[in-house]
Image (cartoon, rainbow, N blue to C red; front, side, top):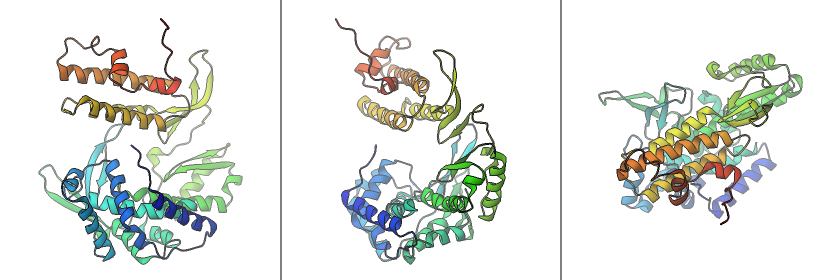
Length: 399
């Protein structure tokens, strides 16, 4: 579910963006008081809640916060920020499965810290919109080229140095990182993508200033620190140049995800899409296009499966609304390119999972195919069919 930014906050963001755009060398001095503005903290809380997420090291959930006095809780954060006594808590580290197998670490800040990071993001992002593992010193210098407010810089430094809490199988607590940590942004931190994007901007500026677009007949397409370089016949040179510049910046390429592809003959994945040659089913010809990647479909299937577990005892309307919200969000992102086959795969999986979920709940006989038919699930029960998002609702036969 998207959350609309209040008009007063949008006005502030617009002013910051226009100032940064019109004066590229301007440095912002007075920002810290905006971070703890009452309306910004309140909106930051609701944004954090919309993103859901597990509790941090303190075990505090949104339900626990709202069962007390939310306004008082937010005022407590505001007083800490205003009085400059705020200190972030350690980040709880958990291991989550990767779509291709194995696990990767994810840091979970406490809700309190997520709210403050979101507030800072609301203020800082418009400034950097106008203009990897990341070395902290260079990163802070990059921020300081635009932000001179010492209290905001102090906030960012604290988040970069926050320790990570891990627990072993016996529940024993171990802290790593902290003040000795010299690189990286907290994985899972709200403000991390903004900082990663900012540091990546150094690479992009050098690319432009050194004339690589013309020399290599290439273009960089990036989102935060994920990027592809599209080149006409000079991909090897572009890769070697990129490795050298990344080394100078104190960064390293993820070699497991770095490769050269001949895009007219080989496909590659970027930001959830697969780009490259596609096969047209009707007449068999090949064309260059984009479609949701198999990993993206697998991730959605995993989320649907997690929602429709037997342990979920919420009323069906509530379950359905969450399912539809999930499907709508996925379809809104994957609304470009060739997507019918991916949509059909999702529809088939959703039908099977919903049928299995309701059959168990209502102890329906056999597989439930008759009681929970395609027409019932996507009609009477109100589940969104993605194929209709793609081609529109099919016309019904006239009687």
